Length: 453
Image 1 (cartoon, rainbow, N blue to C red):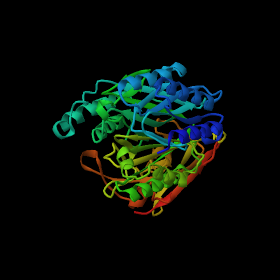
Image 2 (tube, helix red, strand yellow):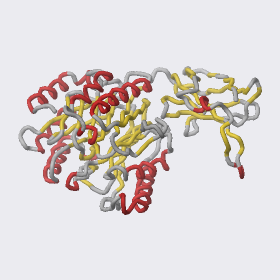
Image 3 (tube, rainbow, N blue to C red):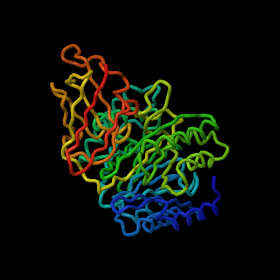
Image 4 (tube, helix red, strand yellow):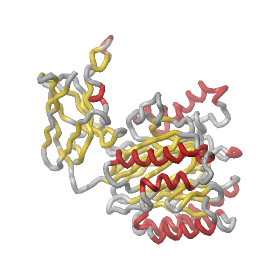
């Protein structure tokens, strides 16, 4: 890990290059700062981090702050939170106790705080909390069914509190639900947002019961916080699993490389929620970070933390890569946020015809994807094979840009349900279909597709 003097110098480097390390656009801003407590004064460290974030954000109003902190004992955590909230509005601060953080400045563990600032006129933020989930004293071995029931309910309630927007893009979930409990919280959340909606996040650490999440200036356990981000950007997700030193390093690079490929643009920030168990396999913490930096570079904004359970897409032999998981351990999750080009506009009509061996294909579902995990528009063909796309909220205005395409046609099943897939499997995934479109703004777009069974 960094020694104290090196970390201070690294923080100075971050602040001096703040307008490069965190990409600033006219519409959406993400900034990252990290401070280690040099004087055993958590309140002062909290103030210093908050002031550093204010400086990095410049004149941009802060919409939300995500905090990762690693102080021991409740007393010190309270002092840290108080210091942060003396500078920043407490209703903007959410976060969790973690095993440490990592940014472009390096890695920290004890007595350190990392802040991610989010702002700009083209990003909207909704923060909610669900308390008293009723699972903190339960064990997965003895109480699995009760944990499932309570966390499903907590996840649904958490999402139900949000005022959903047409341009919701990402849910950041921070929870007191140590892996593997968190898988049930994720399932509950997905009942509200759908299985295709991008979710990332992690669990508070479990040292001596210090599983606190932070909301409105308060420390809360047995709770979960959700931050919904909406606006003119899209996200890409990737995940990897490993529990041996060289594999941890290699998978960090592979996950970073995959998320950049999916992003289809230069990310404004990359979020990484990492299993603390992976770090325990390293002789030097910085080796995994260096592997990430070898792919991401040294100037892209990076907000990372070590958690007791991660949330994101898994990469396991028996699981599709883009399936969201509660994190069964040993995972590193990456989320790239790419700003949209607001000058491209929208198309009020995107339509076309789908044919099968030259004949119109009725009741086929066509879906546009901004990334493999982020569908943005969908339509079902009529008897003539014609479709007209609408966003998932029913709006016919499709943002201009390049999109991958998936097409599916199901046979009729028993009692009006759906049966087996009638098209080649490759068509049903944007990663394998080989189909894509470029929607042009301020005009009608038509895209015809010919598929085979």
